[in-house]
Amino acid sequence: MTEHPLIFIPVESKKRELDGKILLASALIARGWKVIIGTKAGIRREMLHHRNALYLAKSVSSDFIPFYREIQSLGHRMVALDVEGGALTREIRNDLLRSYQQDAVEYFDYIYVFGDKIKKDIAEHIPYIPQEKILVTGEPRFDLLKPVHDPYYAADIEHIRNTYGNCVLINTSFGLSNSVLGEEWIRQFLETTGDIPEEQRPLYLLKHREGKILMQEFIAMAKRLAERFPALNFVLRPHPDEAQEVYREAFAGILNLFVDGTGSVQPWIKSAKAVIHHDCTTGLEAVLAMKPTISYIPRTDERITAWLPVFVSVACTSENAVANALETALQQPESLSAPEKEKGDVLASYFANFREEASDMLADHLSVAYCQPSTGPFGLVRLSLARLRSRVNIVRLRNKSRKDGWDRFIRMDREELCKRLPLTGNLNDISALRISIRGGNTAYLQSLRKS
Image 1: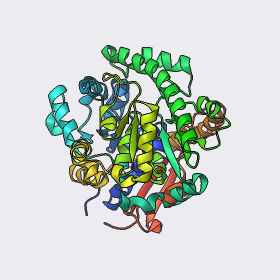
Image 2: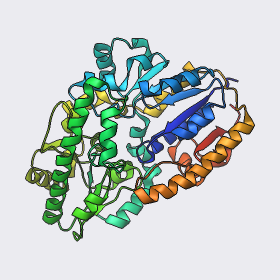
Image 3: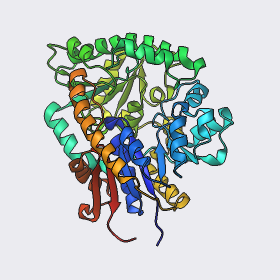
Image 4: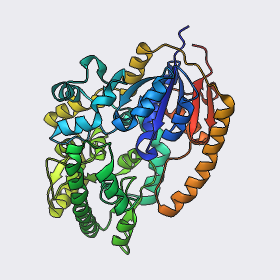
């Protein structure tokens, strides 16, 4: 019998990441892995009390080198899958330099990327990453957009349709310009964070300024659509890092225009008649889900605009063009529900998910590459105290979140995992799983079946 190691899977944004990580976890558990999934803080706590496990990072950042060194000293090994690996600008070298920082790359055994084209771009622009380290796997969260995974979101889709009926999703991504943490915080972050290479800082400051203008353009566009299509409901879904008040105030009194950022975006995409975005990953997800997808780009700058989500969508530069495209989508949805061959081929070159199942590709490679069993936990008294402190912090942070409006991911929910894991199709018998919540913010998952 081959005993696989323990893998740690951190989640920063519940709305964006958790479902895909649950799908990946289920694929790994079905192959005999033990999984600890949870918040970054919880994962760090647990890793420091284990040895010889595997860490799946969501970025390769110089900011975290002290953490990399610390866990490496405990025998842990690291691989990475960049969650932002698909929304790329034309100046892709800048994106790659920020995503894969040179002094951090050496700590990772493998770097998983979304598609073949991204691997080729890394080879061309980032010579300090050995080619044998880069593997194409796609991104597991995009698997959930395929019809085979419709049961995963069935209850969510039913709830959305019962609440909003025929609706169009308007997705915004102006977290750098409309931060829930406030203008002063985001400006200080952009000016001082080491997570942005110094030569690229002006581009992020530009994106911050341009986003403020674009946000007002989206507000005006949403109002125009609500007036032109009174029989439709329009749901504006802000990025998880965005403040929602500006939208709620702007739409006050408009009966068919709503602001709702609850849950993950996938069931919203599946429920909508069409999806409108600027240049964000949601546009790519909508195309993968075969939904009519419209990109509203009244302002564009190739230095800061992610080109691929625009390319695969119906690109519109005016409110009137958006309205006309939406009219076509409503009357002839099949004409916009699948990308034409050229766009489909380009999308497939950047997203392996377009034709394959990323969760299986990633789980298969990990199962071949790693078979060393983990050791732990150790220091049980210290670990128990650290878990208790985490539970106290969760109560404090939940109270603070209610006040400042930031929907932080701070806790794991056993009931939610019991509901979601069987829906992935990999684990049908929940009674054959061990699910243990540790410290309130991590979950230990293991199959009880003998492999």
